[in-house]
Length: 227
Image (cartoon, rainbow, N blue to C red; front, top):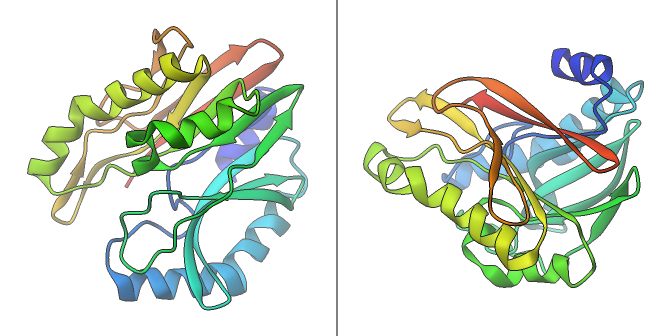
């Protein structure tokens, strides 16, 4: 709620949070199932109730359970109402079903879409949004990985985002976790990339914070949060 109050004070139109931010990300199937059930039964309803008074559009991720299947979704919430969602098209978590739809949304006249974390490795996922005249692609990330793996992705994550921006001609905005958690580490990749691949804003590695950038017609904020 503190972040939403800040967003309201700063007149932020759109704020994006890391992948599966609501209850946390995991690669453990039992944990994923528990979190998906809790999100579907309680947590999303509670979140919507708490944010209903705010005008900022939220993009918040969670594992959810639908008709016996689990999806890794990013939910678009306005005034306490879920107006749509995107399900990760290329999930790399056990037991998670791949999403097949690529919806776009409009905030302050700007059409945007969402890809989630591993989707950034796949040009087709971004292209599906560009084909619908999206001007902005949001990438909730969770790069909390074993240290050796985190080191390999330290530069690759940002390079992927630059590639997707240049490929589609869209603005690209990512939100990631940062720091260490148990035996895992995220250097973090929270950034805003221009359509020509320029990195116009970025939160420093291993630091909690946010960046704000004014695209034409829309004020966007992205959070980097301790994992």
